[in-house]
Amino acid sequence: MPTPLQFSVALTAVEIAVYISVRCAYFIPENIWCRLMRHGVPRVCIRKLLKLVTKSTVRRFQLLVHLGPSYRFVFWLGVNRNRVRRIPAPSFQDVHVMIFVGFGFLMTFLKRYGFSSVGFNLLIAAFGLQWGALMQGFLHHLHDGKIKIGITSMINGDFSTATVLITFGAILGKTSPVQLLILTVLEITIFAANEFLVGEVLKAKDVGASMTIHAFGAYFGLAVSRVLYRSGLKDHEKEGSVYHSDIFAMIGTIFLWMFWPSFNSAIAPTSDGQYRAVINTYYSLAACVLTAYALSSLLDKKGKLDMVHIQNATLAGGVAAGTTADMMIYPYGGLLIGFVAGIISTLGFKYLTPILASKLKIHDTCGVHNLHGMPGIIGGLAGIVGAAMSSTVLYGNGLSNTFPERPKRTAIQQAGFQAAGLGATLVVAIVGGAITGFIISLPIWGQPPDQNCFDDQIYWEVPDAEDDGEQLNSSEHGKYKINPEV
Image (tube, rainbow, N blue to C red):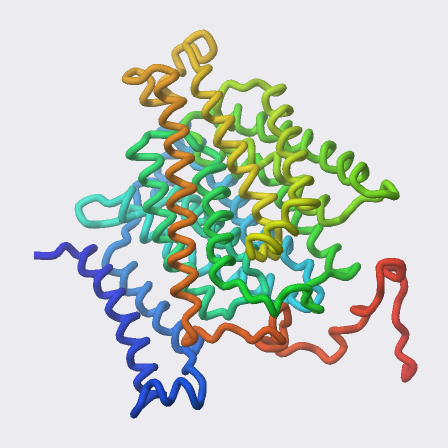
């Protein structure tokens, strides 16, 4: 007899398969191949797909999801005050702001794709946190066939959504909303499985998720981008920024930079670990900013700053500090990690991104490889070193709190499992991304044609005056176009 969870997962898969089949059959009543060749491939309607996934998710929550004991924390006031203080509601709100404001506005740099950057970010995040609650609950919070949720599981739901938003950055402007929703379902499912492998099977430490979120999301996205590669998008006229779009993107940068210490410390298991995570991330971010500014000016022939570097490379320190966030690396360790991440990220934007596009045919719209991919690997490598150096001399009696498996493992063994976690993440991300890329490349998902990529008008009602100022060159960013009719 199947459990409610097994029945629910199977029912969801069947619903999606039946929906796609019915839609295809509706559009192709006779000869499928003739229909495809003569009239184009039918496209799945986003309105009906959203209706399907909404109903399906509501049914899953009704059947499986129940409130955890922390939901009734109000009754603990005056009884167990320490327990009340450990409820991570402020960290949850900080992470929430990063997901919906930080990531959303960071991707508004494209001059004709601002509506889609913020709007689709909201769509993906709102759906992804629900699907993430189900997938992560299935693996981590299942009790008697029920998924118990609370503030911590909601934070983890936001984390699972972050992986999709990172991938979204790699394919920004080149996909339809339907493709993004299918991507969200597939990637979060694979992410949850990989996170379970790294955290529960290998017992590798990754409190700030340099490996499981940032590296995973980046290389998953690069694999998807490689499969979706189209030569017609090379040097696309709409793939660029203007003065005001870069300012909006900088808003996202500032929000992410301010709240990154909360991101890395939100799920730290102890108060000491959370305290260290905030400090280490704080100094890593600060060092990264100075490094990015200095190197950006150094790489320009006229000594000017590049806004692309400032918007992105200044955040690499937060990414790289994730794995070691709650480890005893001291502030100078955080500074060193931020310094290295700032160098690698800035050089990546300057030299590596063009090579990926021209040689490997990987078109990375936002440069997630430089902001999340390589800094995520740096964080994973730093975690290997941090685990190898861990000892009771550094941690005292708190060693087992930071590394729960240390009573059974030596420091070198724990470092080996950290390396295994990093390697497994990269393999799962690349293979999973390639498979997902092939699935969402099917014509039924309605991928936009080359001429409509990086443009809001195909999906949004855009004001007539939205293109004002788009033709200004870099020397005219501070000027305004005057309407002669006014």
